[in-house]
Length: 230
Image (cartoon, rainbow, N blue to C red; front, side):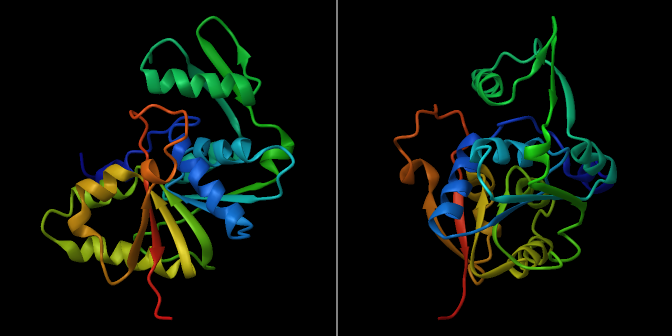
């Protein structure tokens, strides 16, 4: 595959990781955090999903960064058309139910169209940034990084220095005691690559939110906290 693993894949759709999104929103609410940054946001569906789930009257701001200029352009446009017939997985069907409830899609025979409304778009911002090369220009309190770390770690093989460099940039992108919400697969499958000098695992989302009425085929996530000396 290469060319930096096809710019780290870019697969996404609305409400793909709804448990992770809700966890990030709960952390923001409980810690008076005013902004969530999505690292590896691809074409923006993840960022807009967060904004929709937060509610139309919420003042929380959302930023998305990605290495690919074309994806960022799509995100900034906020216009999406997608086929509704080819994916019949239970996970996709749950996402479609949320889309129908929150997004007012324009429906045709085989497609849905979502035009993100101004009140949602005005709370979002997108920019090109490569976290593998540098931290964010300004540190934040909360980052969500779903289905991204696995692609960095999967081709590091035994070279942990590459993974550690990425983690240092994520670490420096967070304010002291900041939170990194990531997918459980990345954490469990590549646990050996997690730098213990940087992160304090906070909780497994499945254990923290067992009451959430979502089936286990959703990635239930991990929350890591920036490790700072008190």
